[in-house]
Image 1 (cartoon, rainbow, N blue to C red):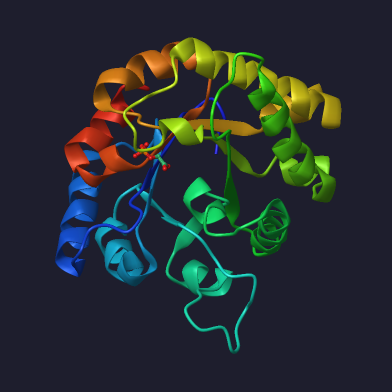
Image 2: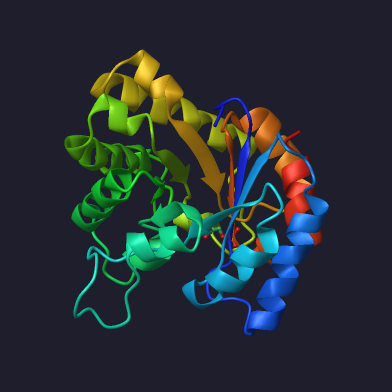
Length: 252
Ligand code: PGA
């Protein structure tokens, strides 16, 4: 995947209710995204809908992502899905450390273990980072830096280049309070500067960065043009095929 081509990922979370609705949504996205190139698009349905969604996007350029995976490859782990299982269904990407999972107890250490496992399976982790709230003194920068340091502890420069980092300030997720394009640009530069310190400039520049948090059709164009990131991780607005595709088109 070329980093200069934007990458738009739809995280459906615990939606929709029925398999039929998931199939319709997936088909709607596939039908509207005829392009073979810019931007790249992936959708992350819940695990129970993955198989159905996979069928609907099979003949399109829309790619499949998983919302989470287990540490384990198999065995006595009730209620989990393994990397191998989601890969078997056609998943190429796996979201790791989404704030909604971190709120449920997923730690930085868990994130690192999962990232290592995903890379070993040759899939691409989309690692979510981001602060809970913003403060005047800028302590949120330190928080984001710590998350990046923790991730870097385990990863060689070659591995770091393979992952996608999604900056998702928690205060902007599902709230309608989007970060401004200036906030996003500032964070893009900050993340690159931290990665430059931890690795080197070529590595920092080759990591794909996404922004997530209340991205909608009406703000996508400005966030993309002025935010400096390489795409979006979209929650709520990915549940309507027209809106999701409108966001993707705003990056063209
Ligand atoms: P949102 O969610 O677009 O609904 O804010 C983003 C996310 O959680 O990835």
